[in-house]
Image (cartoon, rainbow, N blue to C red; front, side, top):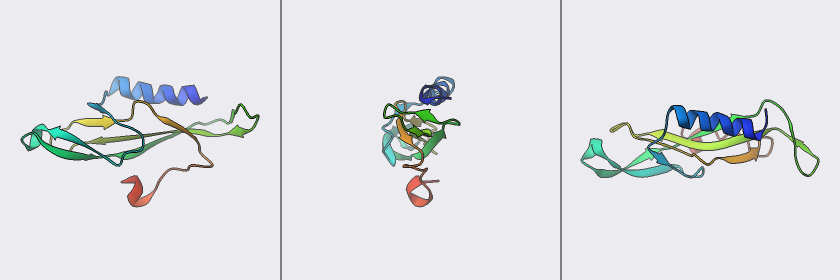
Length: 106
């Protein structure tokens, strides 16, 4: 796999299950107009979506790294609207491991 193939995995997910909203990869929650709560602004808690490449990639510096895609996704429990990062953030998995605990909102 390559960076493009892990981005393709996220693109496939977005195509097969399109989100209602596109959100940045760094948000923890996203406020939306909730039809299940009389159109009041409600938050959607976003969890980290972390997809790791299975092979090492040679970087332009000549070093090798195992790349990962970081995105966020969530669903409103009241109205079912979804939010997901369509434009992901690519990271070196050794430098930026997946978030755990409260920060990851798992």
